[in-house]
Image (tube, rainbow, N blue to C red; front, side, top):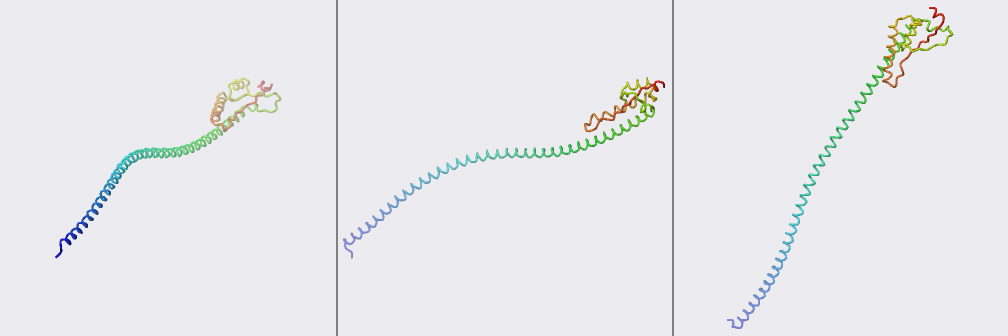
Length: 213
């Protein structure tokens, strides 16, 4: 059997072990408390950062909405530019077509006016030949009297010719020639490229022989 002294030592040993365990537990508790405080601080920092991030995210979202609206507005402007460019190109093609048609029309007008001028000149020449045939003495080269030039498109020529008796054709024929000669001058005034219509002059030579007739 163990004595009281041995039992006391045994109890004391157990007490020392328990005391050491208690100290270790206390130190562990203090360490856990410090860690908890550190964790709480970190958690507060994380919460603060989370709050800041939420604020920044809200600002970024607002900026995103503004940028999206601006993008939509610019997209509409770009679409308007594209539409204007399409209409501009269409207008250019239309203008080119109209210019080509205008060129063709001008060429056609020039051709028709040239033909009309030729026809008028031919008619004037025919009528002139007819007038000369009616009064061959007008073109006689055997007279030595200075020639007097009078335009066939004036009324004075008719009066002068009739009074002198050198024109054997009627007044109506002369008026017809004057009308044709005047009408042939109209196309030449509209087209600067064309020359002036042919104008015939008659040289009336007065002589004693004509006066005798």
